[in-house]
Length: 581
Image (cartoon, rainbow, N blue to C red; front, side):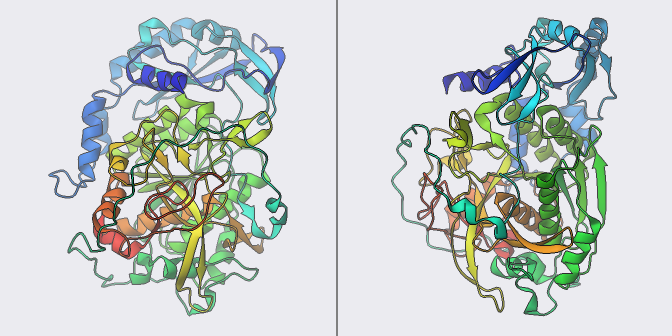
């Protein structure tokens, strides 16, 4: 734990930086050195200017009563105030060219300098050997043998380097799993490695008397957009799983009041595409009319090779987001693989484009595997927050055991990145029980495989510190939870067949859809909403903007009154949230 904390601190204090996914003895088999002429592509993440001021700005942008509430930066304002300077980027480019690297075009926000060179040159520049390996979990590729070093002359402007490992570091939460295929999931869990005892939690205090915090209850849309409701025969899919109608009714989404996402834009980062015909079938099945458009944006040559898990994930994401918000514009950022360079470049592209109001991430990795990647993703989400973009991520489908151990995947206590990062909303999954005739909410409990726990190197953020039951040793996840568990799942059309899909990736996509509907109600982006979510619950209690989910366990933590590491602060009531954010 101390080593990981030191890594994060080194990045912040401008000490020599490191990159993740270095050689792991016992987990990787060494196949020898990478051939000297093998091309290697790297990305150098640049440090922001005036980061302390930037963090203060982002906090005030989301604070009601602040003079800059919802006054988000334009791309030009970001570049002028906080982006890496042109002179800093010029220094890095000059050093790389002098060493023999070939530079790629620079994104407009000057965030990541991408370059390529033969492996031997890369090894010399970053002072680390590259080895070919077979990883027990990630497959075949190459990794750096020891933590790299940024050249001393660049350490004041470069925070980290990505690309020294070609292995994927993230996975989709097991996969966007089909409920019909889940009987085998009921087998006993593997015996976990010894787990630390959770830090003592504050003694729960009495919940505040439920009451609205503001008088700005939103009004129904005077010119309602076409809703997703066309008779309540659409609560469930043909083969089971709750449909978008059920979600909208149960969690009181603004689409029930005439706001279907029209005029808003969602981003989704994914390594595989979906079929337009599947989305059309999903919408037709549930009586919806598509009001928005789909844009596919390739990052680093993505998408990658066809992969059933990734394709199913892509299908789940779009049908959950667009299914709830048929008016939304859907920007799909397609990357070749879930490795550190491609994921960081995708987030950087989202920031540079400044097109989306919210961006969903349905993948994750054990945060201890690559803390520097989590640091960079958090920094890129911080940049997006200044522009007004809300970043969201699934907490994973391994319960509290998100990290790999000697006995396999998901056997060691831990949480997943990027959900663990401060500037991401971490979304977990629940099993709600709804009235199958009309979608009305009956009850809800935490899902046994929903990821949650405490960060080993992100300190407890101030916006969680005042919340009863949080564990004080670090950032707690999840923040919120909703439908995603496998008791019912969410109905999707995949390869022309209707099936129920489940997982925290469902939950994250559904909550992302809620965020952009709220943006539509308010006529504004909301940016970083984490402090406001906790402010609402701490100020008003439950029954207005959130429901308290008090049942269920994820194998280590148990859902209880108030905050817990299974369901977070609870599940949303979207219409009231729209008046409180």
